[in-house]
Amino acid sequence: MQYGICNLSIISLRLEPSDKSELVSQILFGEHFKVLEKRSKWSKIRLEFDNYEGWVDNKQYIDISEELYKKLSNSNLNLTGELIDFISDSNKNLTPIPLGSSLPFYENSLVKINNALFNYEGSIHTGISNKESLINTAFMYLNAPYLWGGKTPFGIDCSGFTQMVYKLCGYKLLRDASQQATQGEVLSFIEESEPGDLAFFDNNEGNIIHVGIIMKDNYIIHAHGKVRIDRIDHSGIYNIDTRRHTHKLRVIKKII
Image 1 (cartoon, rainbow, N blue to C red):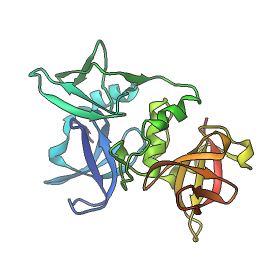
Image 2 (cartoon, rainbow, N blue to C red):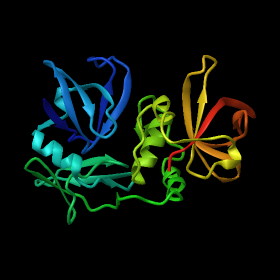
Image 3 (cartoon, rainbow, N blue to C red):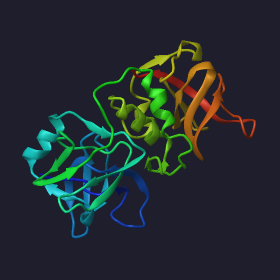
């Protein structure tokens, strides 16, 4: 088995080994993974954080040892806390990194990948935050444009949004909305929900296709065109701009 880590700001995780293939997710700086299959240009990988699989360009990551992979997997997760910030290498070269990037072995403003040291002086998220922190964290992504497969404030999808908000607060969600819907405890009514709980929505075939984070007073924050705040009722999401329901409510889950 081979292992790798993302040493760039953001790299694309694709459905197939092609630059033209669908973007299924993104890998942020410092995230590590197993390499399941390696070809001349592309590698099929499985992310350690959520076991999500896809194809990445071989030029966009570096190899790490199995020992380092295990150390990373067992170490505390330190994540960047600014919408965008920079790390600098030993030659003072700057790399921009987005909100929620990982900082391997972070200590005294230093980050280490293999034998390379990087300096990071911005704010960090580490450990487990209380449930009330979820909404404040979600506000950091407000007005981020929708991007299928995206995971940053510069483009994010509905489940990428919920996953990153929970991750920054110290909780682990799976990647896709349908996967996240398998987690947590079912709530029978909106009235039972608390800010930070997740609401899931389905299509006419009954497939989960959307997720958002419930706020107080029957509001919801979710990624639809952009990360936005709308009303939620027993039918689903009511868009306050178009004055119509856009998503049909399927289930509400308490994750924490």
